[in-house]
Length: 143
Image (cartoon, rainbow, N blue to C red):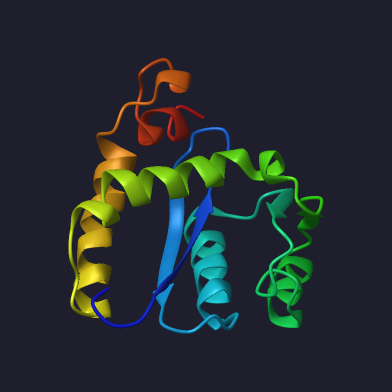
């Protein structure tokens, strides 16, 4: 943004690459991450296993409590093992290079509005080679 930074979290179904929930914040506390997690569980149900990196938000008591309260097994990447979370890392690359870096935003409200449209497009219209040129929604809703 013109001034400051924003932080983005996404909850993704690894099989389909569908972004189930996401949140944007101007702080790095765990609250916005927990909100995204709770929304994904509410809207799409509980996974058996949930994988993240070892960021402070994902090791926080609030985050772990949500997973434990839903009997979800916690899985965390090894330190420095970006490939353990490669699908989310690819999502971040896509968001940055296909969307964020090509635009200028003056405030968080505009970023949030634009990301809402972008994630809808990503899930509904963006074909993925590794998904046999299907969209994340097509793969997700097949099951």
